[in-house]
Amino acid sequence: MKKKPMVKKMSVVNDNDDMRPEYDFTDGVRGKHYKVLREEGYIVRIYDDDGTVTERRVAGERMVILEPDVYEYFPNSQAVNHALRTLISLVLERRTVAATTTRSTE
Image 1: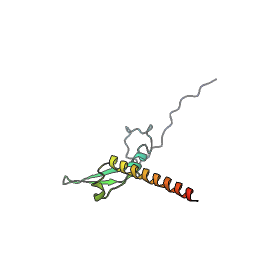
Image 2: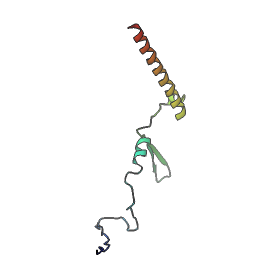
Image 3: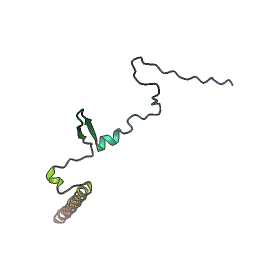
Image 4: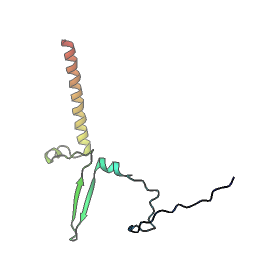
């Protein structure tokens, strides 16, 4: 059985492409960081000629922005999560009590 010779595939060269030949993206993964950035958000920094830096936070889907008066009571994620978990347990407890009371009166 005769082996086929290895033939290197030639890529189409685009004359309008400014990409240097030393950049090789053959093992690149498209959208590798997209999910994390979409969920958690990111910061855009603009560096001006006068040396100032302007920052703009792009909120992700999993991000919640607290108003200043609320932030005074919940300065970090742990505080917010603790308060919300406490509220959730109270709501679930109240629903259970209400369901039990409704069943007993029927």
